[in-house]
Length: 137
Image (tube, rainbow, N blue to C red; front, top):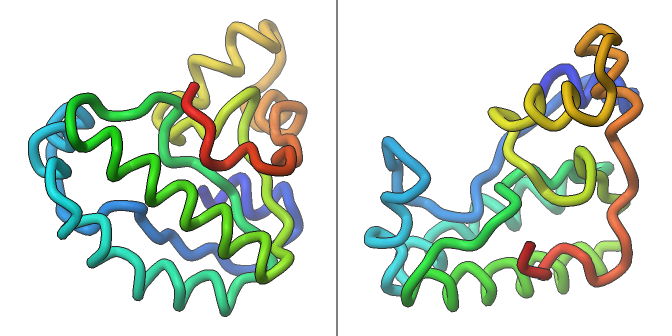
């Protein structure tokens, strides 16, 4: 995240999560996020981060959780999209979706082989399209 912030010209980077409950693996959110509680509990910290932000890098993952957590995730992404629109914040992502930073190397090595990672990330950061935040990829 620090690399992306630097490449975008920001002096400070703050991370805010769509989901408030810690998990060891992405799949854990299927169970932990089955109710709205963990999603709604994340909104105050997201709201605080958004109101202080000059821009947003979406990096929450390119696929939705499964089961009931999928509905809550989509509602959270729609809420975030609404807030970004209301605050008129510019947004970016790496590649064709809001992929998690742990997946950036995989993306950049496929899309920009044979160039250094930092340059590949620079070439991969793109503006978020209008109404893209809440889509399911």
